[in-house]
Image 1 (cartoon, rainbow, N blue to C red):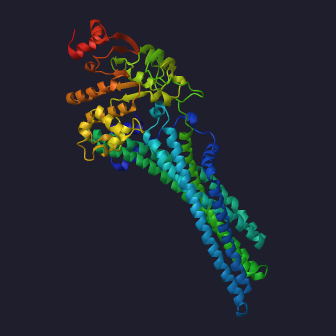
Image 2: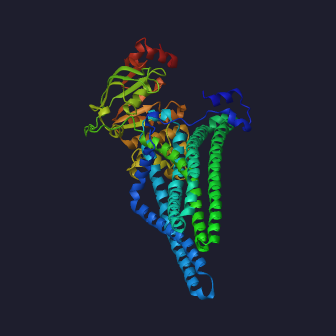
Image 3: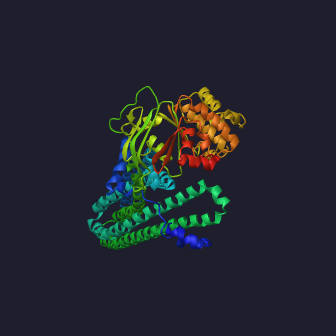
Length: 617
C-alpha cells in the first residue's frame, strides 16, 4: 500500500487541512522507464515533427511577426524626428507628416498583429489536435501489459491537461517569445546607432539578467513536470472513484475518498505554488535589474544632453528603445518559464507516443486462408504474465479444437482459463510453444487479422455511452440497419428494445447503466452475432444472471454457437453439459478431458466440482 494510503488508513478522520501530510509521496506512475527520452532533443523532434506539416502557415506567421516588430521599432524613430525638428509653426507641415507616418505605422502594426495572432493561434490548435490524435492512436493499440503498469486517469491527463499546456505555448507563448526576440535584437541595433556608449552600459547588465533566468528556469521546469504528474495522479484517483461510485456509496466511504482525493489535490497545489514562487522571484529580479540599468542609462544620457553630446530626440528615442528592450527581456523571462512548463508537458506526451506495443504485426505477416474454418491448436504453450514472471500460468499446454466444435474449459480459479482466451486473441504472446488458427501461427500474423476471426461475449459486457443500435453495430460498423435488427432478434434483445423510449436509438448512458445485467448481455450477444466470426469465445457469459435472464441468454447463445467453433469458460457446470468436449484445467495444465458423462465417472477435479454443485457422485 502506498505510504499516503497507509497514513490515511491509520487515521481516517484527518481534516482537509492536513491533506498534504496524508499522502506526502503521491505521484503519477511513470510510463515505462525504458521509453523515457534521455535527451531534450526528443521533445524538440516531436514538436517540430508536427509543426513541419504546416510550413506555409508558419511562414505567414513569421512574415506578420517581422512586419509587426518592424512597425513597433519605427515608432521611437518617428518621435525622435519630431522632437529634434521641433514643434514650431515653421515646421508644422513636417510635424503633420510625422503624425501621418505614425498613423500608417499603427495601421501596419494592427494588420500584422491580426495576421500573426490568427496564424499562430491556428497552428497551436492544429498541432495540439494532431498531438492528441497521435497520443490516442498509439494508446489504443498498446497491449494490456502497458495498462497493467499505468493508470487510465494519468493517460487521460496527458491527452487533456498536458496538450492544453502545449496549445497555450505553441499558439501564444512561442509567438510572444519570437516577437520579443525580434524586438530585443532590433532595439539593440537602433540603440547602438543612437549611442554606443549608453548601449555598452546596458549590456553590462545582461549577464545579471541571463543568469537568474537560466538558473531559476531549470527549477521551474522541474517543478512544472512534478505539478503535471501530481495533477495526473489526482485525475487518476478521480477517474477510479467515479467508476466505482456505487461501491463507495454502498460502503459509506464518501468522506474517506473525498479526503484522499483532497490529499492529491493539495500536493498538486503545493507544487504549483512552489513553481509560481520561483517564477515570481525570476520576474522580480529581472525587472529590478532592467529598471536599475535604465535609471543608470538615463542619468548618463541626461548628462550628455546637457553637455550637448546628444540631442533630446536621441535621448527620448534611446529611452523608448530601452523600454522596448527591457519589456522584451522581462517578457522573455516569463516566457522562458512557460516554455519550461511546456517542455515537461511535451516530455509526457513523448513518453506515450514513443511507447511501442508489445504485440504488433511482423514485417511480413502470414496470411490466413480465405476459407474460415475456425480450427485452433495449442502446441506446448508456456506462459507467464509480465507482472508475474516467476509464475507459470500455462505449462506445456496442448489442445486441438476442430472446426465447429463446442469446447468447454472449466477448473478452479487461477487454473489458466481466462489466459487461454487472452492468448487466442493475441493480447499476449506465449513464452514458449505455438498457437495456431486455421494452421497459421498467430505470432506470425497481424493481430488485427487474428481478431477479425474471433467474436467474444465477456462476463462483464462493455456497453458504450451511445445508442442501442450503435452498441450492436460495434460488431460490424458496415452493417445495415436490417442486419443490426436481425442480430438483435437473434439475441432475443428485441424483447426489451421495443419497450425502450426510442427503441434502437435509445441512448444507454455510460456503461449501459440504464439496462439490467441480462439486457446488457443480450446486447453483447447481438454484437457477436453481427460480427459473424468463425470462432466464438464465451467467457462466463451467464454467470452473473438470474435464472430467468440466464435462460433467455442461453437460448440466444445456442443460436450464436451454430456453425461456429466455440470455446466456453464457465464455473457453473450446468452451462457446459451440452459441450462436445470439456477440458479441465488445473495449475495451467489439462488434467481431464471428455464429455460431461465421461468426466463424472472419473475421480478427478471435474467430478469433485460436479459433486459440489450438483451433489452428483
